[in-house]
Length: 283
Ligand code: NDP
Image (cartoon, rainbow, N blue to C red; front, top):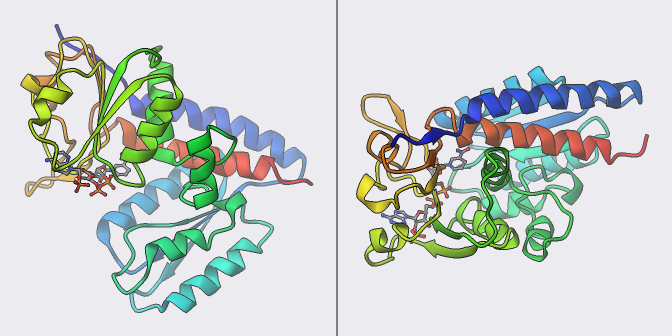
């Protein structure tokens, strides 16, 4: 059996065109959503991610304002910019592209973004809301995973979901969303003994490790849903996920490709968070 593909690129295109309609109606109320992206230093992968975000904003009619700061910028300089953006009425969402240079404290920068403009959902107040299941801004990649499951009409409630990875930006929040959806959730990390024994129990397997090809066919239960969050550049330049796609697609029931899976949907969720943040502004 060959798995059905969950086409994140196509879903993202649909989502962006829906958002464009909402932007048009906001504009008739005098509001054009604006996203400020801040990059410190010249990490080439970050440059590509920021470019994709700017493109998606443009496609949805969202203004994007990019701030390129030199890698030598002090924390005070970055905080000063964030403060200006927090107070700018034309800016509804702010992101600091990670990673930042080692002399900067990424956590302090994330916490300096106003809660209402924290469209990456990394602020502790938004993360606290996620823990409680209360309204707040959800982090983009975990939300992308849930929307992809919903769109494929894959029920979460009552299923065993296994998340491989426990980072603050993917693994932990995606596990919380799955818990909120009624799944029984197991979270694995690099110390998990016999990873395959756990992943083979998964009805829904979400993998976010940054280890190319970590999940092989023998580690997947037949018919399982496999969501590959990983983005890895091989020495050949090819981009691959954390899942050995060719062999796992012969075992799984559903699978997301890399590229063209969670990545474009993550960007669409960022645009959605920005549009929603603008819609909450009183004219
Ligand atoms: P981190 O490096 O912060 O976390 C990786 C996690 O994977 C850690 O918890 C680590 O465990 C775990 N891990 C590493 N190796 C193994 C292993 N052999 N077995 C089990 N667990 C393992 O990465 P991120 O969460 O930030 O990102 C993960 C991947 O997702 C990356 O490829 C990244 O590029 C991609 N990504 C993709 C996005 C998208 O839009 N599609 C968005 C964000 C990230 P431990 O904690 O024990 O070290």
